[in-house]
Length: 397
Image (cartoon, rainbow, N blue to C red):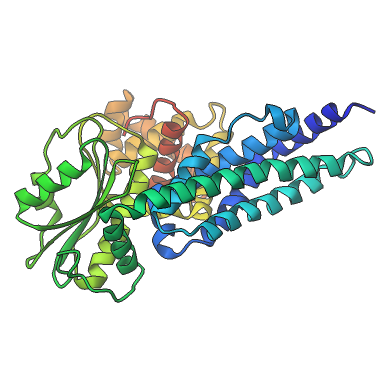
């Protein structure tokens, strides 16, 4: 029989095998508890995912090495506690999410510890409880500190009004100085100079501007309003080519009235989710909802995203080269408007080679390519985003 330290190390090794499953379960419960405003906030959701992953690693590391060697509470957890305060998530809800995570993780500990030596499970669960208590104490402290700071800011009052309106509450808009009975385009700007960027765009377009800062992430939610409908191509022509390093613009579609005001913001949030997965680039970058709506839906709905990759990419990986040739050919084919002759040019092969490769891909997929071109394109774009997230060089578009 090994020492308690060896027993804990063996248990953590088993839990790490299930780590993705554990994180997914905790994240799903935490996200389900959010109201629709927060559940559609791209920054909040991505931050929540990062905080869950960091918290799980913190607890597993503490179980393995002992509480004294667990290290400081992860910065991702602290940042999410601050973000929760700024986003109107009350402390009780934030702590409840921590408690739910504790319970779900404990279930996995019990499942992985069915053959542990008698008497070793109790100390492990006690240690897990102590580690989660440390997390909860830090979440409570940071949430209260951020809330106290925000309450002193007129900007926070403005943000609270906007959040209330987005949630469907009937509130007066006089304090905002913005008319909802108009045409709107929602924009989420992120990066150094995000506020300056939306002000410059609004001035160039001669539109009324409503904007609220979302705190330390240098993120601004903005709406451009006016009596006439502003088309997206008109707006894009007004966006400066350069406006500081790394400014990202996520743009919704034109909408009218209060409902259109909410919808265009939700569309901008969906576009922002795509932009977050694409990563930062130099200069101003634009992500338009109408150009990425299916990709955004697959990123928001993890079941849909995983199903697309499993159905349309996994069968290709059984090939000798792991599906690399088929995937490259499919990318080129779709980029060429499903023209095999045009697809052959960037691939450096002949048209019949492209056609043969497409036939091979079709055989492995077990379906006619023409019947699933849209699904294939979304699956390939998801795989491309996965490469960016993993820090790999993305395949050419």
